[in-house]
Structures are given as structure tokens and as C-alpha cells.
Amino acid sequence: MTKTSKYQSRQSDDQGMIHWSAEENQIWHELITRQLSVIEGKACAEYMAGLEKLQLPQDRIPQLEEVSQVLRECTGWECAEVPALISFDKFFELLANKRFPVATFIRSREEFDYLQEPDIFHEIFGHCAMLTNPAFAEFTHTYGKLGLAASKQDRVYLARLYWFTIEFGLLNTADGLRIYGGGILSSPGETQYALGSDIPERKVFDAVDVLRTPYRIDIMQPIYFMINSIDDLFDISQLDMMQLVNQARALGLHAPKFPPKEKQAS
Ligand SMILES: [Fe+2]
Image 1 (cartoon, rainbow, N blue to C red):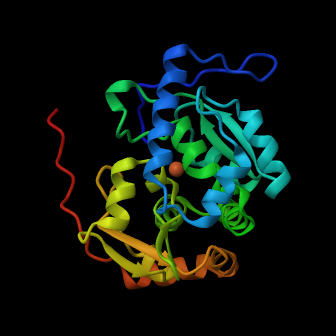
Image 2 (cartoon, protein in one colour):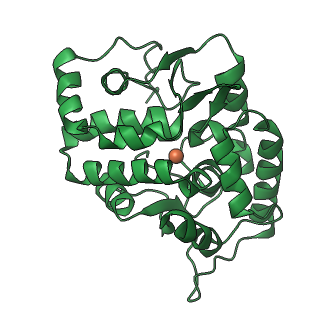
């Protein structure tokens, strides 16, 4: 979530329908057809099963209710239409109520390959397929409840947990590495890089280690954390996470594996 956005969400009409333009539907079409071919053999089986359930249209942006219908049946989740920017309070409150925030705008052609703000393609293609999975859904729900109750300072630690699982999580399967993180799965460049490149470090998931690891949102990740099974997310959601946040705070942050962000000329 950035503080400013050049994007504005579209609002649904009285029937809950959003009237997307032909150009917006075309951008969705190009994004989804490209990404479907990129993730083949790279996305985890649970993600692929979720996509199968969602049956996302390729020629137009789906209406949120179409996606919500499937999620409700699978895990009791639904999509929530939100503006391009929402507060952390609102974000956690939605997750705590099993409502996944979807900003209803789609990236412009100028930002086709990369944008920092999560658009509807990132939220639906990146995350909603995984939300059909009970372990992933439970983990996300627990995360929302923890975040809602947490202090501002503790939320900074929790954000790292979200980042290295829901956004950038990898799965170490018997068939090789697979992706379950939506930040990777909605980005063609990072899908290739996360599994195919020798550059990033891939560490076995350890909650305290994750909570101590700084990240940047505007670069390819130098570190990924791997779990062995999506069901591990059930176990992680049972941990006393706030106690682990205290441990992480006492131990201090790891040195960043990335250069500091260059200050923008003002
Ligand atoms: Fe995301």
C-alpha cells in the first residue's frame, strides 16, 4: 500500500456490476493470457486447482461477485470492492472478516509489466486462486485478526510475515520448487526469476527469521522463504505469532540484502 496513487478504483453500479472499458478488458486479456503461459509448471498444484475452480474469463475483467461465489463455496471468503488506497485498519478489518480487498482498477499500458500498487489483476489472478485453499484461507484469516489487534509497531513485523508468504512464498515440493505467493504469480519477470535464477537466496521458512527480514517492494526479491506444504500454513497460523514478534524485536532485524532505496530528487 503506497501513500499516493495515480489510479482510481471504478465503482460498481446498483447491481454490483463494474462497467469496464474495452481497453481495460483488453489489458486484462493480455495480462492473463501471458501469465497463464508463464506460470505453467511453476505455480503450485493448489494454485492451479484454485484457478480451475475460478474459471476466470480471459476476454474481460471478471465481476467480483463471480469470484466471490466460488470463494464462498470453497472457504467462506469473498472479494471486497475497495478504493486504490485503503488504511491498514481497513485492510486488517476486511481480512479478519474473510473479505479480500480488491482495488477495482487495472494498470495502465505504461505500467503493464510492473506497478507497485496492487491492481485487480494482481488481487484476483495473484491471490484469489489460493484463497480457494483451506490452509491458505485460514492463514490469511488469522493474519487479519492478528493485524487488527496489533499495535502500529507490531504491524510492521506482521507485514513481513505477509510479504514472505502470501505475496512471495515458495513451496519446496518433491517435484521441485513451486510458487504460491501472489506477488510472484502476477508478475512474469519475477515468476521466472524466483524459480529460475541463481541470484535470490531461498531459505527454509522460520517465523522469527521471517519477522526479522527487511524487504523492499520495488525490486526483485533477494530472499524467498520456502515451506514444504501449503498445509504448513495451518500450523503457522496456530503459532503464538505476537510472542514471536517480541522475540524478533529482541533479536533485531537482519542486515538488508539489498541496497538502500535511492532518495528521489525533490
Ligand atoms: Fe498482494
